[in-house]
Image 1: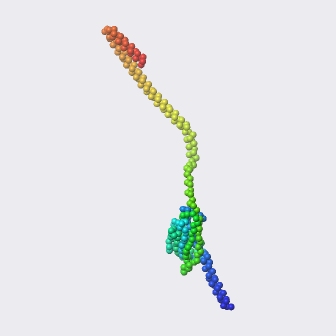
Image 2 (image 1 turned 60 degrees about the vertical axis):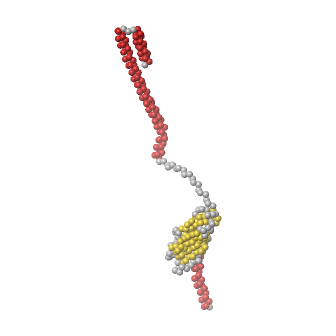
Image 3 (image 1 turned 45 degrees about the vertical axis):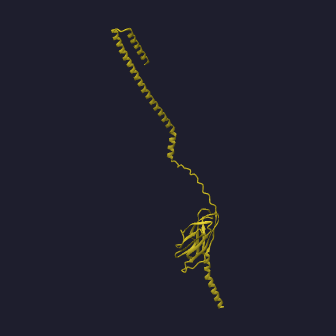
Length: 277
């Protein structure tokens, strides 16, 4: 009887020892996340590789990823915000073979938690269809001093690729006038109200200036003509006086009949000129 009890105790002890290992195997996970359920041809979207283990602390992770190179290409791999501190192998990819890989160490006390970011793949789809990423190989080591390998479950990622979206139409930017201040509005109203009056006053002023200049010109012309007329009258007066003096002198001396007629004709011509002037 004692032998059976001893055997039963050994079985129970083994079960209790192996039970945590079964839990560990279920809690270590490698999986993908992204911010959209669809991707369009030619657009780049981020695909994040994440890790979860809430039971055992982990200090090393490596993984190899695969995808269809005819459907997409990896533009770059980012390590920003990664829980990995030291990279045994820098993240790298090959678009010709459709693979990507990384390997790194998490310093003591390691990592224990959920949904930690490892790397971010920036992916650009090339044609429509279902794009699939999978984890083909991986290794996760416990932070227990012995680098114990942990069994890890992996997830497959699939996303629908749709045709490229047409570029958004550029709307014409309408110029928006800045609101005018109340004082500026009042000034504008006053100016608009008095503009016709100001314009009319300017026109009247210009007309007056034109008439003034015209009056000055006419006055100058009249003065000049009057001065010319006086000059001619003075010349004719002097000419008549000289002819009379000559006539008196010749009459005292005595002159022929034809000379007398000449003097009379000259006097008549002078009188005609005076009438015209």
